[in-house]
Length: 103
Image (cartoon, one colour):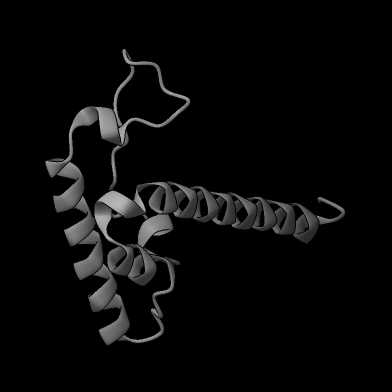
């Protein structure tokens, strides 16, 4: 029998929380960098969205769809991040929890 079974579970949950928070922070940085091309209203809406009810979640999904559409229309060189070399792939935006759950 393990002496402290909950201690390990708490560590795992904390690790997930830190990871999600870091992804959100990174997504916000990328959005802010691309704000001149994407539009300040879209970026502000994505970052400051309230998703506590169905309406808020629906609105955020609409903003994510608009973001994907705008990113697809921008040249690949614009979508590249500063740490990527020209031979690596460009940034892909998905409906991940980091984008839809806190932005």
